[in-house]
Length: 372
Picture 1 (spheres, rainbow, N blue to C red):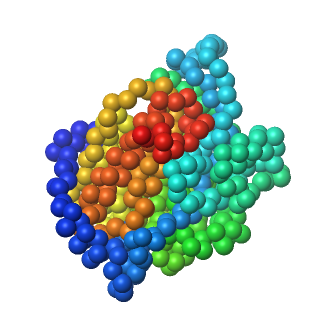
Picture 2: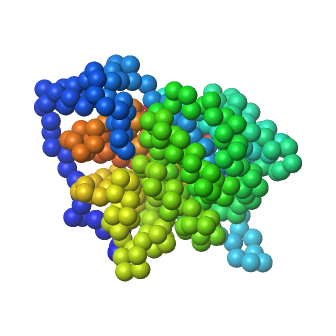
Picture 3: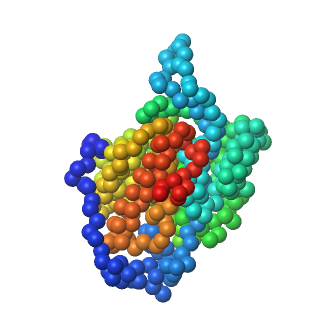
């Protein structure tokens, strides 16, 4: 299946009258009484629209990125000149969290760095931008995880040290369990970079989040080791407890091949196996597509933009998408849900576009004024 050619799945949203929108919001999002959420992005129906204030609990990978812009990758026994070399905060989860925070979302982030000069420098930089760091742990016996980023005009390559990302476990999360109080959503970024969270204990932690009426999202990232099921097939059990999965085309193909039947490795097979799971596939310059069992696929194209650095664009998209989708309770299987998903995709594209026009994955997070 060629996932980049989706002309038949382009989705157009029918215009809704103001009266109809108001009626739907009263019916689904602002009505007193009613039941609490099922496995959807409907939070408690008793929440009043004017007071709804989402808070996102997050965990995942933190890296110190050593960024070198190059025109081509070096060969063995050769040298390629870089215009500059910079040390900046990185890691999928941290990038996503910083963008979300800068976009105005309340974020509580748990992660880890080493108690070394690079780890301390990273914390000083992001705290100086206002990002909360009090729940980021410092491992005294480990160096910080580092990612060397060779960044080209349209793509990038990485060389990574996974010291602190491998060492971080569910126990470290539980030490900060108080952060879940008042949160409406839990997000894990960089799943395949977090071996210590690929355990049944972490699955139970995610289930405890769901018992708190929180929705759950997951961004996998690429699996450098090629273990697309996770450690001991962990991803298979984790996805049963996830509402929203973010992958790019390549990641989606690998995950479907690993988790689905031998005869069908399509995204539709994955949705059939996990009927409550919503899958967002990012397709670079081609846009993105949203899938769920029983729902027509929603394709939203991306506008052409000037690319300075492709690093971190996917993280920026996820932050934009979540900041839009989680901004208000949305009823499942309704016109409002479809419109909200299209709006979320468009917000994701807009945030990613700003990121593409800058050097580095998230030297400066995207703020609302950057989208004007």
